[in-house]
Image 1 (tube, rainbow, N blue to C red):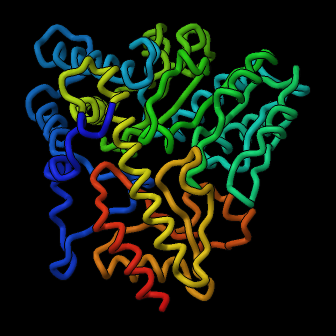
Image 2 (image 1 turned 180 degrees about the horizontal axis):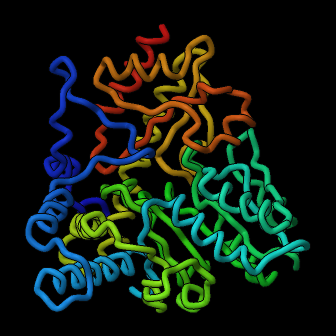
Length: 409
């Protein structure tokens, strides 16, 4: 599907109220999407409509409770299309990190000395710290897979060697939120399965840019964050149903013991779940006239083509600035449209502040991918990070490049 089948960037921008924000009469250009995208109007409206007209707790015999049940079921169907799973395999939680700790604790109850967990240096610590906690509490050995400083890619040979018949789980990031590198998760999942190990995929940075198909991938768990793809702050997990049914999760005795409800402790963020479903529906609606699952794939394919062009312009434009250092894979290779950079002699916070004064919003630091920043020896200031989203324009990329050039001279 070509980009002509998907709504234009100009039409998309009209859907985002925040894009009217200005700094000293200059329109704001949002490049902070890797840390959280802006939200289209339909997402906010869906959340407000739920709170104003349907707000209730679940499973009771009055209309707004039944409407809440229906809304949550609808959200699971939307995310089943997003993941390529069954609705019963969709779990919602506070955020990716909280969900991951919950799953890790449950899995860890069955592990002990002699067992191993594989993690990577390239990952956000949300897919490292939960497994470190299991290792401490249960006496499990943690195996860390390095990445290459030269191109910011995971050492796949080291990953394959790290997986053995002692491995209980492989925790693998689909894409680096710091460097934009896309990993060969299919290979990692295959190696894990061959060794009898489970696979836990962090798709938080991947899901906003590439379509997911957990059944084709064959992973056991996959987690993402809807606020990275135009939704509210929330976490969403795919888990194989038989695993969700069997996990030794802490739960209240009266709570349901069937998947996915047994994974969701307490009353959930109903309005957030409704908003997250609205974000998935919004993405599908960018490719009108198609069934939702097919529409999502078409939307991601088209947005990928657009972002590749924008990212190449960003990479080349920033690369032309003397002394500026770019990190991560080159354009045209498997990666997301997210660029990390530093300029010797300038704090990353100084560059970010200077861009903000020009109406250009970027993030800086380590983004909880602390090991990546440590490996590059960059200290607490980390890097400047700029990412393209569905509403990013070529003019905004040019403003970013010009702004950095003005700040660093």
